[in-house]
Amino acid sequence: MSNIIGLINYGIAGNIHSIKKAIEKAGGTIKIVNNESELNSVDKIVIPGVGSFKDAISELEKDKLLEPLKKAIQTKPTLGICLGMQILSTLGFEYGKTKGLDAIKAEVKPILVDAKVPHMGFNTIDVVKTNPLLNELENEEFYFMHSYEVVNYTEISSLTDYAGHKFVSSVQKDNIYGVQFHPEKSREAGIKLFKNFIEL
Amino acid sequence: MKIRIIAKLDVKPPYVVKPVHFEGLRKIGIPQELAKKYYEQGADEVMYIDIVSSLYQRGIIFEEIEKTANELFIPFGVGGAVRSIEDFSKLFHKGADKVLINTYAVQENPNIINQAAEIFGNQAVVVNIEAKKWDKYYECYTDCGRIQSDKNVIEWAKEVEQRGAGEIFLQCIDTDGRQRGFDLELAKQVVDSVNIPVIIGSGAGKLEDIKELIEYAKPSGVAIASMLHYDLTNIKEIKKYLSDNGIEVSK
Image (cartoon, rainbow over all chains, first blue to last red; front, side, top):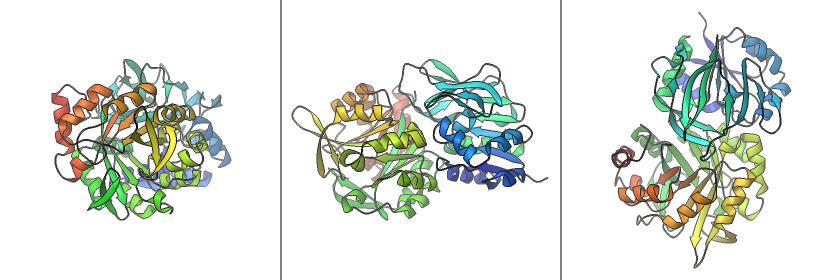
């Protein structure tokens, strides 16, 4: 069975280089997706993201990928990473209010914590509802680098504690997965997560 | 929060060098090889600073950066001669996760911090501060510790936070490369004056220095160069020492 992972390349803000490298290290085959027809040719989807919620959505619109992506993630196994997870949500509040892909009923808001923000560094995930992506990764450490969090109550896979504040560090709904941390920056644990994604 | 232990590479392409007081460069090795070595020792991040680029007024040399990034599965911060949004963009595409900026923002256009934060997210924008101590205050320097700015370090730290920087990387010209401990007061003052993470460099000479810094100033990360370059210790040993002393570190 063909198992090509499409890495969505949108705008100047994509950090696709390191994600591609990590998925290849995990044994996956990557295809960079720049348009709708390339999107249609892949089996799985990874949505990366560096930048702001607002910019990410407007770049997807500009590349005519927003609507096709909304449709494709309904059926293809999909992994959103960091901002890529955040834009799976209904609504974002970074630089104004922006509608997201609406795959996860959630809102993306600034982290509310009495500590330094961005939350940056390795932190542990506490798996509250296991799924195949997190297989054998319970209580592992991953690298976080974010100022916003996904506020959701129904699709939580793991929580992470930052200075006493528990936020959603990963979500899953059917074939759609999102991780707030950066597996491509999380040493062997991150490579293992990509292996799990390849095996989905 | 677990303290981050960061390996810092001062680069004069194609070599990693180690200055003392930002002067007198000694050749240490190849960036790519050292980055890989520190990654395997358990570094939480690697920082790569081309320390002569601003001074020589030349552009960024991307080749070494890309090669170095290829060996890493941890965050990679890159700085030196960053002058435009296009530079940020190119560095991210070459494998940087964070971009450090100092000289251009201090001397010419602090607005670049705002612009970069809006486009790339504030977590990706790190302001590098090179501080020098005077009688009553600390002053920001640029061009690898060569040029004075008249900017007060604490005020500048607050300003860059307002402008959207996601992190401050604080170095100290007086203590850098000497391996005689950090300027603890400087570190504490900067950490306490902002709400963004602060990484402290310049001064680690023995394990106790690192512990003392963390306990006194409570930074988010510590950058180590000389101690690693001269094999006085390794990151595994640093983490074990800190953990034995009750300081939380990553695995």
